[in-house]
Image (cartoon, rainbow over all chains, first blue to last red; front, side, top):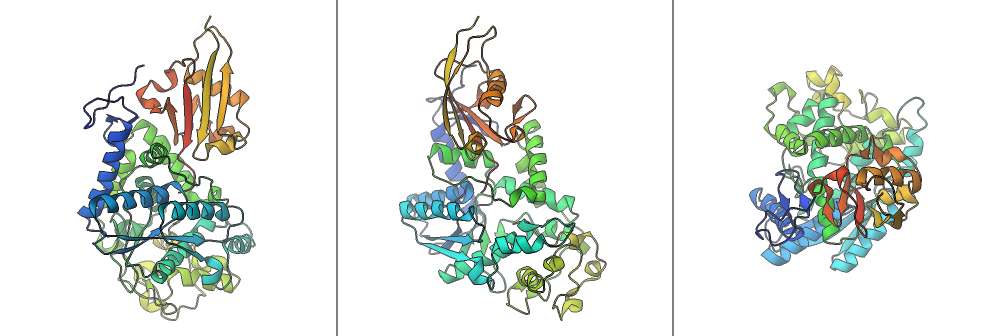
Length: 356
Length: 101
């Protein structure tokens, strides 16, 4: 079967290199890369995500998404005069044999792109807890899944915030893509987590309670296009799976979504769109956020998720802060911040934490 | 009887981890009655190259969803996917999208 000609702006001068999942259009490598970059620029401009002069902390893992994000932001900044001050911020979770190799990839990128790099480690930020130590402790509770990604997701979010504050950032960007967003929407549905569904769908958080504004410029880019963009641009990225990932619920959701995508290529973006348009009853909306009584971070409870997890770990009961109950935590103001829905222990609590 | 074909098979994006970490393989597929297509190639890869956990690479008679296939650096979706007939000196690249991020 001969390769069709490009249907993009080059007018068919070149043969097509891929079929785009959203449109089904067959485009060449050059038209695709231009369109991909233009779409990220459009996401930034439509949402007014990064104003001129922004000091931007790019959450860098060495993986494909953050590698493409940093590369595209750098290219757009140079080409369109966005006046961005880009910093790479990497988190060292303390996962032996995995994170070390990933951090080496981030260091190579920082050198090649001449971008400043800051690494923040769980062990330094969280009283000596590394992810390996958390996993070991979580495994001591018999008969329960370790939920490593749940811990790690909450702690990494906090660590990235800390690293960004250290470099004087005004904004945080992460490499979450459309597939990640669709997986999260589906996970929230499957867990009955209406609170998170109500909050999802936006391009990021505006930055309340002292937290920096966050956004996801690749939110509308599919996994396939990100990987092909990296391939066509010959980007060097790290592609091993975290040792704890196979245990995560997200993996099942990803397999389901990939199977659906084979039958309907636009399913990922359709699902993201569904979440955006979803109207939830007022009772399903989360309570207005306040501040964590321990660290001051934005929280809808008296202890934020990160402090609650660390509190559970330090008491030798790591699962206190996940699952159905947070009873026994040092949450003096708990009653006050509880809505009647929360205290019923219904499904909205079960999924109080997201896996990233 | 179709003549033997010589092709380059390459794995990336983490898929190489299922092949002892080796990315590039120059292989010669023996002559057979039917012409070689991607469907046959996958069976050959499973038998001759795949080192571990075949379910992470092959599902049913195709690749696991989430693994991209490029034939001569162009998306296999444009070229008949499993039915593409291999030509001598073709390059077939399998890239996993399922790792890391």
